[in-house]
Amino acid sequence: MELAEKILKLKREKRAIILAHNYQRPEVQEIADYVGDSIELSRKAMDERDAEVIVFAAVDFMAESAAILNPDKRVLLPSRGARCPMAQMLTVDEVKRWKVLYPLAPVVLYVNTLASAKAYCDVCCTSANAVEVIEALNAETVLFGPDRNLAEYVQEKTGKNIIPIPEHGFCPTHLLFHPEDVQALKAQHRDAVVMVHPECSAEMRRIADFIGSTSQMCRYARESQAKTFIVATEEGLLHRLRRENPDKSFILAYEGAVCPNMKLNTLERIYMALKEEKHVVTVPEPIASKARKALEKMFELTGR
Ligand code: 13P
Ligand code: SF4
Image 1: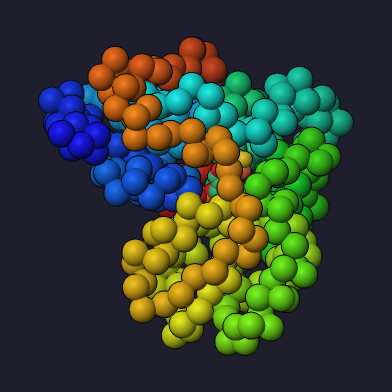
Image 2: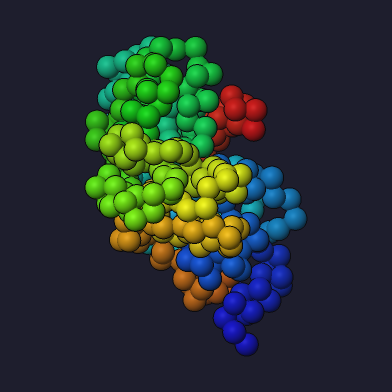
């Protein structure tokens, strides 16, 4: 039996579902029950009723959010090493330090943070709803972390004073994109539309025709009349874009844009995780309930 078939069989026996982020390997996306961006996957995990086990093919902070939002399920991260480096850039001590400097400013944290940091914020956001969350807050000055690029993007869109915490948090994968590469591609594909993730630099955002989360890019590409798209986000998204739009063409803005952490979830590791029911992701109390409040506040402010 092929590995993919073995996984599907085991999944039925264990009453498991597989949630996969848009950056997962093509073969992982193919066996998943649901493929989406970080907000969609959080909602799916939170609303799941029937399954006993959720295999979360993504990175640490996403699996942690699932465990926080649906504590009755066993959440498995196929590869223990799948950790987002940006999430590690903001420690609890750093959040506390900034709160002392700006005691009246609410703290908004991107979901790309560890649960321990989320426990010290007022509300979470994702790249899909960061602008909406900040607009909904009754405050002109906001502490925002850990992605400085997303902080700047939100400041441009809302006109509010967004203070990045830490000062230079970033995603190493999205920093690989440069406008010169896009210009060179545009010279070959004159009608191409440029889609850029808000984790990219300001220079990249300036040349974008569309800025959005990974699933927002999928929606935009589906609804657009354009036939060619230059895409500035992790390469895994191109599999989904091509599958959903076989008549359109998608070009990665930089060939090396790979998140090595996301790619740790191989079919083999998913199979082993299901078979041995490892690696179970748990978030201890009281961190879990404090972080849950911040995640629920995000759903409340954005109408879910
Ligand atoms: P979204 O899928 O929410 O756009 O997030 C991108 C990302 O980098 C997650 O790690
Ligand atoms: Fe983290 Fe960037 Fe990888 Fe997303 S793409 S998991 S933000 S390192």
